[in-house]
Length: 287
Image (cartoon, rainbow, N blue to C red; front, side, top):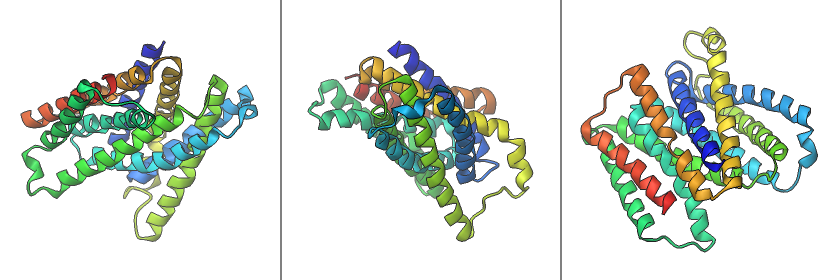
């Protein structure tokens, strides 16, 4: 079941990232984050009420609160990076977030073996190559790489935190609800601050674009919630390293979606770098 839940996580995160990346090309990224999470809160609230999950409230929910604080910042950075594109480079680099739960294990006493050390080297080289020649004299590409790495660290932190937020299925519903409420509070505050500083909350075409995009926004929010849930279940039912490496395959889903829908083409060096980053991630998690 660990493999099943982890692979489901990869599919859900992959399609959520693809959908979010497309939406941010028409709607401000912070608005995409806030609206998608509000829709997720509404659904999760109904689930919590139906299952009486609130009865399992306890100190472990602080992990969910922490995940809710980190998540919006990481998601915003990632969506901005996806909007800068190309998805086939940004998404694989985002998978480096798996380093965080692995590092948590190292802090608790694990030591990297030869395979993990090789994975670290491969990941670093992959990051450099994924930028390709465009890194020279191209600030947009540098910004995309920086945002992706920031998001990767945040995603990895969320993975480590949400796995500790519950021990039961109903408790997981409550933890995900608390996480999303925190997401909305943090993201909403950031959106308000952005508007006060002259930023836009609505696209140039107005609210109509958001209204028309509500089904897609709901899909992004709910797919991300479901992915967090299936990852937590995978980590609880088997080795965390196995869950992490399988869940980290989600960039492959995003890249394939970008290739199939957008017909994106990558430079050879960029494709090689993205692939090497994925290999490094797998070696780190599976070592």
